[in-house]
Length: 157
Picture 1: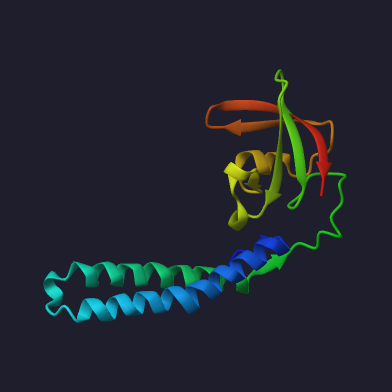
Picture 2: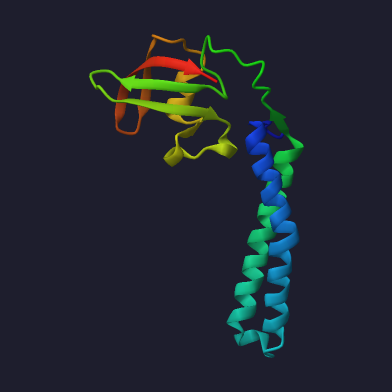
């Protein structure tokens, strides 16, 4: 059974745009590279051809991956999401116990995760630990560096 992909409307648009780019632009670019490499003759020693074929395989793999995700997508209706507890789509401000600095994360589906920009997956250790908790609650998170305790300071959309 294929896993359902939970995604925001913004994430859906981004995936659809990437798929369109891959199908209309990148495929043509790689086909042209292959055509040029074929004109060089002997394929047994043609690194340009090998490189273009590898690039084509990567692009086709990504297209298949995105198409599969889009078949099993569930778009979050942000109007239905509350701020009582943490769920996919929540903007959560947390502070590690004993520290002064707070951090804000957007909890997203795994396909939209971008930790460097504050978007963490609901399947990540922190994201999974926060799901279902309320403002003011303490949450223990099992990390590779050991257990950390977070306090949920705020939940918003």
